[in-house]
Length: 328
Ligand code: AMP
Ligand code: MG
Image 1 (cartoon, rainbow, N blue to C red):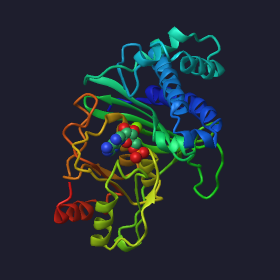
Image 2: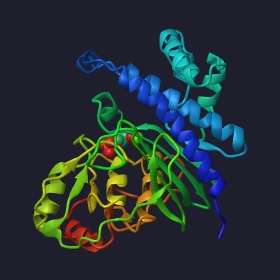
Image 3: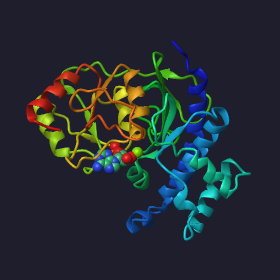
Image 4: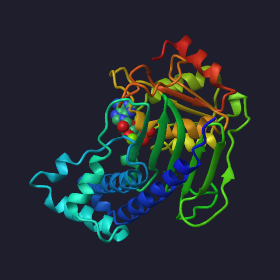
């Protein structure tokens, strides 16, 4: 089997650098930002994160396309000068020589849209609502080769290494196909520690998680599934692919993402990194119909509907409940 040690190390380095920028922007959020519904801080962090990650990928793997969430065309339009200036300031804290055009060109490196035999996919800030609320968000980067996710890195700046001890540093989860999943602090030099899913198989004792935003996943259908399976705990709601991380390290057994009937197609960057992190930790991921997620359709999971993530032991029971209830 091919090994991706180099890609894994580069991906972790890129995600860590992007997370420093995101944290700097988030720490400057004022309560007024939320009240005014001013989304510009997350826009700055989103572009900055994509610029830094794509800069590193472009330098080390210049031939690899990157399917990223953002593109810089809007940034270059007149009217956005102050946004671009704020972006340049933040990027220069980490890359002092960077200029505006260069930063836009790094962002544009993430503009691939079509499937290819080897490509990266990036969500520079997954969970933008969580970012603005000062809660969970993630930088998610994955390498897909021959349609399979082979490297996945999730940087979760607000998810402490030890769930019981907030550390102000956050955690990176790193997975390589066939090699397992490890966690490391998002900053500093530390030994990686393997993570594993929980072995709890009794529904009456399990914990499940879902989106904070009801628009992203039906909370009502999740409650129906919980009742059907005799899951007693209340759902834990958190933003971003931190949900995959939480299942991967055994803090929850199930993550439900249930379609709202709007025809929304899930985006690959919202899942690729998380899927490998959880499957390499021993978990299982399918859509609501039990199909594996297919990363072969460009930007979207066009073949799939919703996403079901479990520790493996509970997967068939959850899919059975979904079928019986006619969900999806
Ligand atoms: P979460 O933080 O898990 O609620 O998911 C955040 C992600 O949901 C964003 O990155 C969006 O790409 C994605 N998203 C946006 N609209 C929808 C929708 N209608 N259904 C599911 N996901 C969505
Ligand atoms: Mg996202």
